[in-house]
Image (cartoon, rainbow, N blue to C red; front, side, top):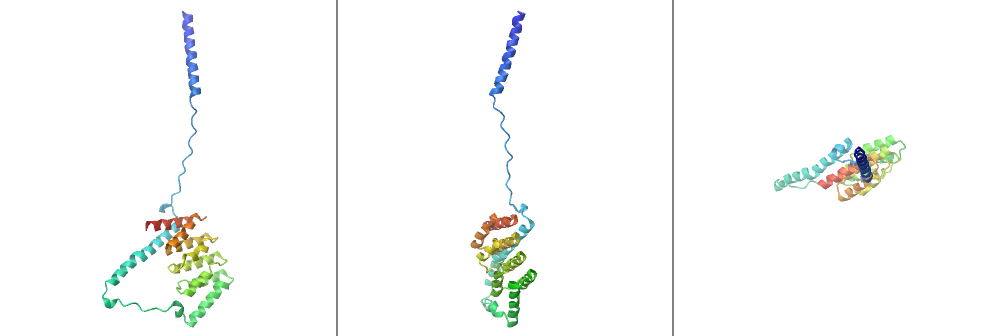
Length: 228
C-alpha cells in the first residue's frame, strides 16, 4: 500500500513536471521592446532663434503698415471736403533731381564700389548709397551683388531692402544661392517683405536651405502668408 502511494506521488510529480516543461516550450517568446518614438522638431515660435523671431516681427509690422494703417489713412482723406482732395504735385524723377555735384559724387561711389580693391572701402560706398531711392542707386547695387567679399554682398543685399516695393523678386535669386548664409537670410527676409505670390514662391525654395535659421525664416514667412 505504501509502495503504491509512493509510486502514485512520484508519477504525479513527473506528470506535473512534464506539463510545466511543455507549457514553457509552447509559450511564445517575449517580443523585443519597441524603439523609442521619434518626436519631430517643432517649428513653433518658441523654438525659433531670436533673430528669426525679430525678423518675422518686423515683417508683420511692415505688413500692418501697408494693409491696415494705409487704408485707414485713405478713408480719412475721403472724408475731407472736395476742395481738400487736390492731387499732390508731381515730383520729378529721382534721376532728374541729381544736380551735377551730386552726380559727380555718385560716380565716385560707383567707381569705389565696383573697382576698389579694399572691401572696407566698398562697404563704405554701400553705406553711403543706403537710403537712396533713385533708379541709379538701385541699378548700381544690383551690379554689385556678385562682389567677391561676402561682407560686401551682405551690405548690398541689406541696402536693396530699401527698394523692396520696387524690386522684381527674381533679382534676389542669386543671393538665395550665395555661399554665405547671412546673405541668404537677408534675401529671404526681403522677399518676405515684397510679399507677392512670385516672391513667396521663391521663398519656398529656401525650405531646404542648409542653414537652420534660413529654413526657419522661410517657414515663418510662408506660415504668416497662409494666415493672412
